[in-house]
Amino acid sequence: MKTQPKVLTFLTILSVVLFLGALGMVFLFAPIEAVMGYVQKIFYFHISNAWVGMLGFMVAAVSGIFYLVSKDLKWDIVELSAVEISLVFFLIAIVSGSIWAKPTWGTYWTWDARLTTAAILEMIYLAYLLLRQGIEDPERRARFSAVYTLIGVISVPITFLSIHIWQTIHPAVIGVGSSSSQGSFGMTPAMLITMFFCLTTFSVVFITLLWYRIRLGQLAEQVDQLKYKIMQ
Amino acid sequence: MQKQTAINRPSSTYLKVIGAIVWKDLVAELRSRELLSAMLLFALLVILIFNFAIDLQPDLRITITAGVLWVTFAFAGTLGLNRSMAVEKDRGCLDGLLLAPVDRSAIYFGKALSNLAFMLIVAMIVLPIYSILYNINVLNPGLLLVVILGSTGYAAIGTLLSSMAIQTRTRDVLLPVLLFPVIVPVLLAAVKASGGFLQNLPVNEIWPWLNILIAYDVIFTAVAFMVFEFVVEE
Amino acid sequence: MIPYAVSIKYMLVGYTAIFLVMAIYMVSLFVRWRRFKRDLQTFKELENQP
Image (tube, rainbow over all chains, first blue to last red; front, side):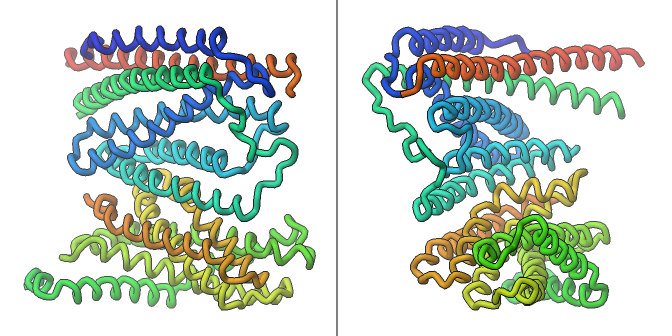
């Protein structure tokens, strides 16, 4: 395996620095929100993770298309890495969101459009991994994964839209502090700056982790090929 | 010789292949009745279980009926999709079809149409039985329209996904896992539209749901048509 | 108005959860990397043997 390229080392250090910086911004710089208090601070990381999770899905879909067109298995590795990392980041978003929701809305979960679609997206990621597990042949696995990613990426917006329409016609009956008040706190300039900083941080972290995961995938492929050669 | 025919009259050969597949499936099913009996029995059992799981009291029934029906169709549909594809694969029919000098998508349309046919046949039997058992008239033309639209979307994406699932190790288990997250818009819209027709809501309230169903059907039939090639190439 | 104690508690739980999941993932990346490296080593040896 090639030694770690310098750019990656640089990105890793940058990620760590930005991450620490983000923590500093959130806890030392950002003001305390009037109504929710300290728990609002979860939002900075929550939204950043959600954003990165969705970005990752786009990366996966595009990689899938590149694979189907070029048949180059390196795109399959990129796609798998993007899905796996998005799965983790989106999981963090869902978990942190739920924890934020409990004191704010009085419940860990509501079935509004955003959360329901988030849950479905997470399930699509998991289904993707399950699909890959059931296929031995790398070429077929890559093909099927790419097709499923495409199907997923097309169905998710439609899903969101349908649930949203469902909600506007029948507003969610949840109780006090329903989801309709999500994000209704006004963001002061300091909060906005913190938010942008966190978004940038997590984007960099995403790229860094994606690179590491791709390298892992390449190593796995190397091992597989060698194993196959020996077993001949 | 055969190639020449395909090049000279591509559209008629294409349609012939589709027709041939649908005919083959229907005739085979007529003889063995394995698929339909399994789907039908399963659907009726699900409805029976619903009777105990959800207290289907008369006043509740109207609101719940749509949901119960579509859950039933979704699960029975999975059964049908699995078996339909498994038969092709296990008996080597799929390989045979792939050798035909015609665009692969014809195979997709053929299978999708026969899957749709089976789903509709099951629905046509289940609906009257539901009406009798729960004393609700579900033989509503609006509802039938929704059943057709919903089943079309389900069969369109289901046929594609079952073609993939059947080629994996985990086969039957995999299809519902792959299918259900992406079929949510269909189920949601179908339940809402069905409920709307059963409750005699004005058409303009039901229209958004029908729109979603039609849009989904068109989009995913197109997508499946384009990517089916990738799913069955050897 | 969310009481101060409750607010702080949930914030800490939230951030703990975030760090925990991130840490678990990065550890898993590291563990898998090491395992593949070892496998590669083993296979290279097997290749040179017979």
